[in-house]
Image (tube, rainbow, N blue to C red; front, side, top):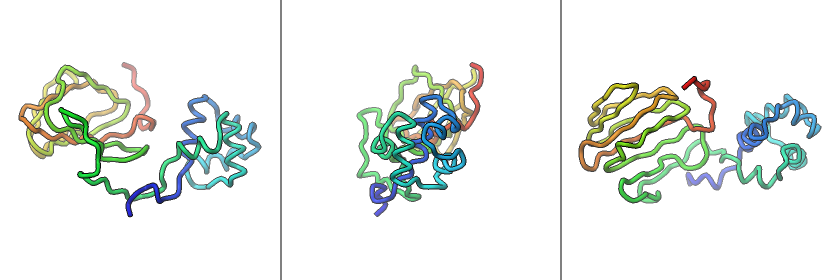
Length: 188
């Protein structure tokens, strides 16, 4: 239970990603596939499920296969439990993904020290939560000190770097996934 592999797949996001990667409009895909623009829009927004035949027409229009689109599809589950003992953790500093799969939101837990010299800049907004320990974050030319229970919200496009100031610090970072166009690209 809770394993998203048991759930049906939502192909809409995979179709949208493929169409955008090819820089095609819905109208062009509709013309190539013989399917209507409203139907394609519903498919991309997971409000309609294409039949096997429609999926094959859509795949042809997107220069791929139905199998490839299904392989890139998102699980349709609305609940998925990621247990601490079942997740792969990287070596020091430890990083653990808190969200499994390709979703609209991503969350990771960082434990231990962090490369303070590494600068980050994400397309979309993110929230940093200090679960244990303390960190220093430099963003927008200012330094912020955060302790246990503190959060820092960063708007997409803000350059920042951070470091743990206490051993075994745990920081949870929750962000809108990079493939989502949540905010318009800002001039840098």
